Image (tube, rainbow, N blue to C red):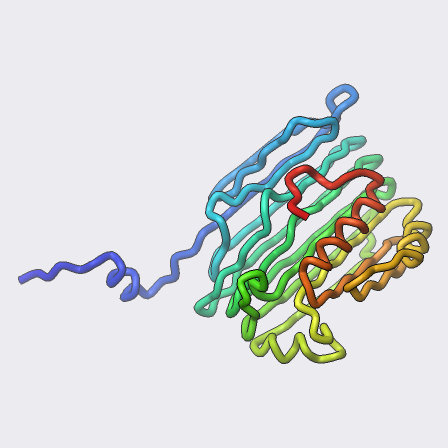
Length: 278
């Protein structure tokens, strides 16, 4: 005797979690007077697109539209000697609720002598009960330049949804010529609503951003940014071990976007990539 079993019943009864793997790896090299992609590897639901323009610009596209608990992502980008590239994303990355397992994400950025890399993805949005474990490894040669930007929004606020529970573990390691110059850890667990309200953590902020700049004029840019007004945003700028470190907190993600746009365009001396919705 047999009984029909639906696909949803079979999945619910299974003892394993369905998880997706996404991989992107690219190397940028000088070709004459311009920078071009010398090697590209894609797997899972992620693709890299290259809009036509003056600069070498790579856009990360998530064909799945978002990520969920248990997904495993890894991105590795290298700029060879003298190359210059900007890496961004097509849209904000959405992290949906998890049944326990976190999204794991590893980002590796390597920049050779006289090369420049701008890492400028759009914001990461954490839905309620989302869990993210993310690790950045940034290795720069002594004469390399880098601008690194990441922003996070806690909850789908545009839909009136706030985040109550979840987890975020963000780990950053920045090395210049093999020497560790920045090590940063942020870990929030379980009752995120309470943690975000505490004055010692986010003081009620619903969105945050971190910017790192490694460039000879980093000290001068710190002083320039300190002289600006940052409406709707709590901003701090410091110079640590040769690195300009910028922190932004905001109650309103729109205020954070506006401030981030102004900050990044000031540091870049040019407009943000065209795909930005900021």
